[in-house]
Image (cartoon, rainbow, N blue to C red; front, side, top):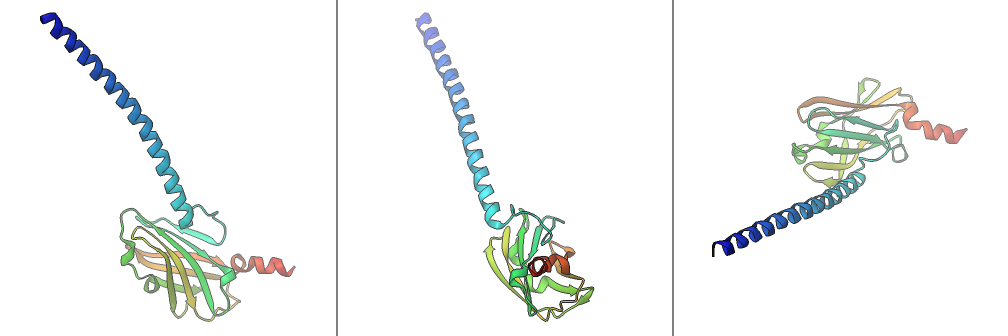
Length: 178
């Protein structure tokens, strides 16, 4: 009887050990699969949010504090009566829905602050990943050297400044004239 108990005990240990090894290996395989799937989903969301777009002279980024802000001026939608910007705000710790983007925004031409009439149309109102189009309605003088979009008090950062030169914005128009 003692010999029978030992055989059963050894068999149970072998089964438990073998099962544990199988579960560990299977878990690792599933973890890798889940990780790669999550990476693909995150990549897809970044592409939708505009995060993987090529940074060029029209796109400016500010990563102060816990909120990253990307601002892109859109010349093809801007004219002498308005300037159009695409904004993308991303964070993992701040509730972005509490910010009034139109009140936080200022427009400055060559250090001359203009009237502050903005329209904000969101394309994503997620509290951690917000994006949309910010339009400034005002008279755009074509003889400016630099235009700056300023966002105030986003994540307690006093001012985030995004600046473009006249040449940055109208370069494609000038190339088309030649």
